[in-house]
Length: 70
Image 1: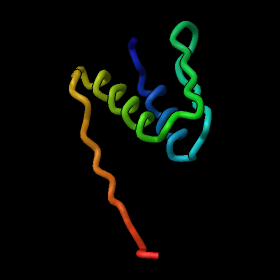
Image 2: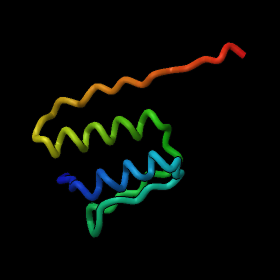
Image 3: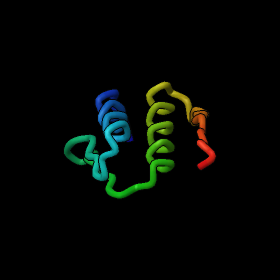
C-alpha cells in the first residue's frame, strides 16, 4: 500500500490527541484503527514512515519513562 504524508500526519494527530478511532487514506485505501494499543499505533507509524522513505527498515523509537515512586 502506498502511504502518503497526509496519512502519516493524520495518524500522528490521532496518537497525540489520544483518539480511540483514527481514519486515514481514502477510497480503496481507506483504513480505520479503533481501540488499538499505543505500541501498535507507533509500529504502524514507523512502517508508514519507512515506506515513505523507501526503506523496509522500521525506525527505532525511544520513550523516556518516569516513576514518581508513589
